Image (cartoon, rainbow, N blue to C red; front, top):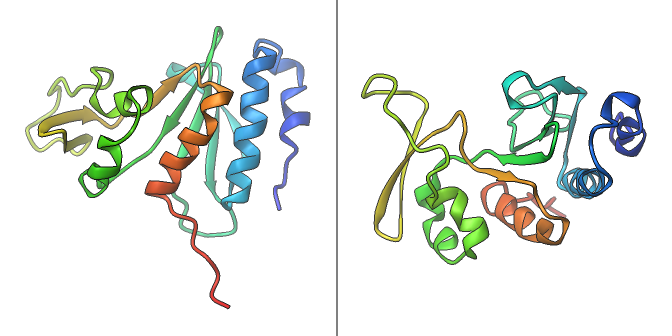
Length: 170
């Protein structure tokens, strides 16, 4: 069970800059993540620094080794949903079948690697989609600006592809 109430958290005055539609998205996303066993860190409303005023960091609940599959950046004029993916080539067939507004985070120019580090950059994600090789900087990849509540099922299906919910053995 979550140690927080997302609705109550978003009612705090420090979140007054977040509009009602964005708050509705956050509440729905939070509920869906809790169903999948993910929730905010105990103190999950961190200052976002370069990402926005605050960020909500989602991690697996009740486990010691905690992956971060998602963050929501709370910016002055919008929110952004950022998802974290590895082994993208393993999911190539799935990604190639996605609608453009979802597939675009993999194939668009946002986050393209500028080769600012050495050739062996540890922060570069390289993968192939539709026969084209992409190199992305994992510091800024897979971000959905102004996520839409109507597209929430698509964002969640994408998460489920990379982070399948493990069923309990009976």
